[in-house]
Image (tube, rainbow, N blue to C red):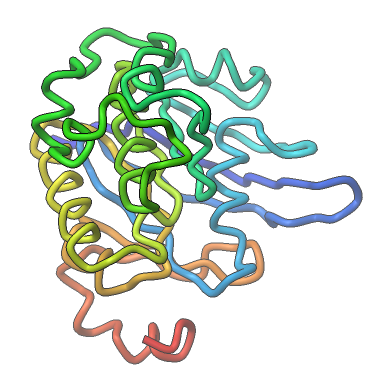
Length: 234
């Protein structure tokens, strides 16, 4: 039996007078990895931000682990067990790796201890005293992912975590996503890198112009390649 952890119904989002999301509908089961696919500007990042209330305004329904979140402010939504890794990473550049890992607030029980995170990301262990400004792009991305794992969040929203990184770092992040899925985390990824996302996701949703235009399980991926080529150029 599967249990829904996230259900999004008729989600609209606005930045000022710009209407970005036009009735988005999708669901994610507990322990599942779901990837939102689409061209730049399709509304994928806005969808993640809208789940957390980080848009100008929104309407519809966002059910997180059985709780309606559409009327809650972002800090209350986070405390429903949601961790967000933004595309811009958002680490504190003047603080060390260790200090960055010590800052996140707890939003749930079961956050991963710093030493375990250093085992998952050996690069960070070697750089624990290094300021954020001196970390490579890949190390900053590892730190951004590790930081949300400290919080105890069980629903992880990951925005383009593989973008612009060396292949060895991308492979390390892929191993991390697999490990988190094995541990029962629920993950929603926005990814432009189809080769990164394809072997990791249990299900895919394709977005175009602020709407979900298709959704399918990983088993259907071979049959969907023609459609994905049309929409994404993959």
